[in-house]
Amino acid sequence: MPMKHDGGAHPGLHVGDIAPDFCLPNQFGEPISLAGLRGTAVAVVFYPFAFSGICTGELCELRDNFADFADAGVRLLAISVDSKYTLRAYAESEEYAFDLLSDFWPHGETARAYGVFDETRGMAGRSTFLLTADGVIADMFSTPAGQARPLGRYRQALERL
Image (cartoon, rainbow, N blue to C red; front, side, top):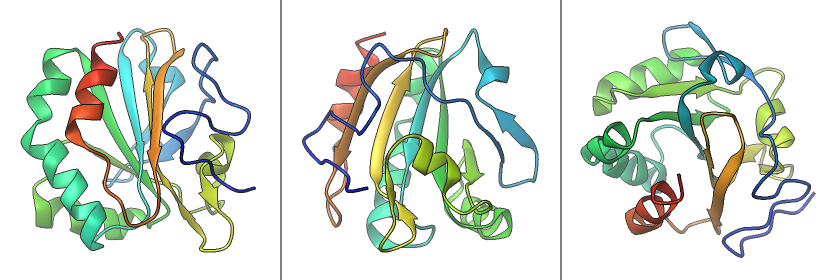
């Protein structure tokens, strides 16, 4: 299923929809479920691969501006198809204080549920979903392969809560 990169529309999901639930291990192997976070707004940030250049730049920018999310009461979850072991090394290497979730097995299942899995390359696309405390999609945006998501777009999304 091809991904759209128009900044909003994803196959099957729209602003106002209930976000698909998931339960994925974080970098420490702890299960994190979206249903378990009800009552808290969540930013679900899909990215292709740990340790890759653009992804590292994006996540470091989120790390350096983590207060924007904390001040808005938003839990930041970054999801890739990497294993939890890779994600733990990545989080330690880059000093990420937020959860990195492993969509490793079944491979890309959560990215598929959100319509952002690249079947050709076996990875998630660069897509972000901002969810209300009730699990409703308040905003969503993507960028094409090779293009980072701008921090300003995250800030715009946070204003929609």
